[in-house]
Image 1 (cartoon, rainbow, N blue to C red):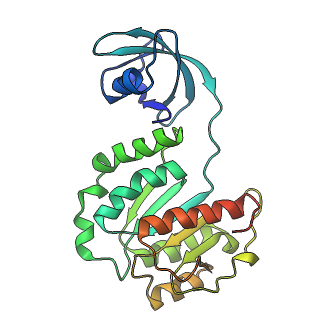
Image 2 (image 1 turned 45 degrees about the vertical axis):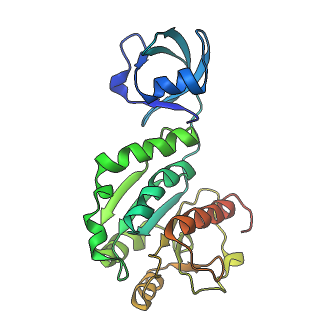
Image 3 (image 1 turned 135 degrees about the vertical axis):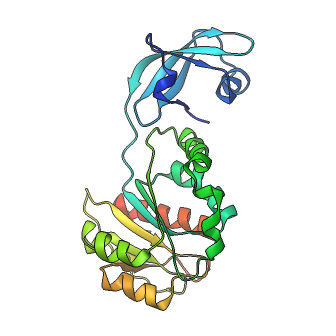
Length: 247
């Protein structure tokens, strides 16, 4: 982990945090820290800090919060993701937190298996630690907004259609090999909604619905990718475009 993260209730009145779990083991064994060392930490949902290691014992350590650091930029990508296989979803939770998404909509689609919706990985108690893992890797503290929506059509037509300018709504679909990414241009303050389907792709009906509601297609070649690979690749492409580059 590149930044130790903790919750507000772990900080005492004097601005100290006592660690006894895997974070303590990381300080002791991975960082090899000694008294007086500075360690990067962060408050989940809050600020990032430099902290001083002020006490080290056999089974715990104490950090004193110090200088507040600049936050990472707010992610500019919102992801609408058709629910993937549970094993794939488990891999995706930390990756999405690490690469940075502002909002995540997990939705149903025609080619999503019904039994996926019984996965325990849709429970905040299960995916929460995976989100923290990804944030710690990236050095961020900002928890993405997560919504799980079973009905795709009302979400797209009643909410998302007017929530983003048409230029900022993209739908990815594997068979599209001639997507005009060179024509996509974003304003400096734009945030983009990116819709990624199941590994079998969006249905023809779903694609028509997206396009009727202002979504433009985005493709990255002829290969059909697993959901976790496609998400990271497509987010990287869109981030590059948002920064003014070409994919």
